[in-house]
Image (cartoon, one colour):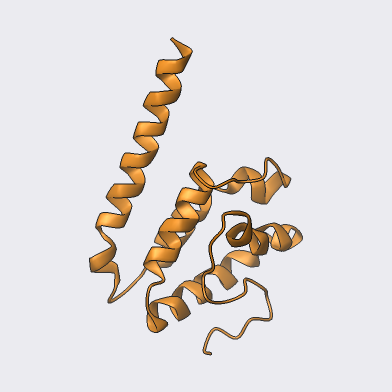
Length: 121
């Protein structure tokens, strides 16, 4: 029965990411920071406690992949960057965990997540 639960959870996770990504064409013109925050919430355990490390295929890395898809153009990337800089403030003690997420998930957002990053570049 536990195997069925794991499969169900994984299927629901995949459906959720697909639903989020299916709205990406609408997000190309404007991305709300709430979308970025929602994606990062999948990584809250790692951001808050520093473990477990996210791995590709985990809910956290699926969210980072979705964020990478949303940040698909220069304008969107700048806006996502600004949203992430706003997220760093409340998580400042764990800013290094936030900055490590893309690399742990094997993706590049096209900018470094760091409080000193200039999002206009």
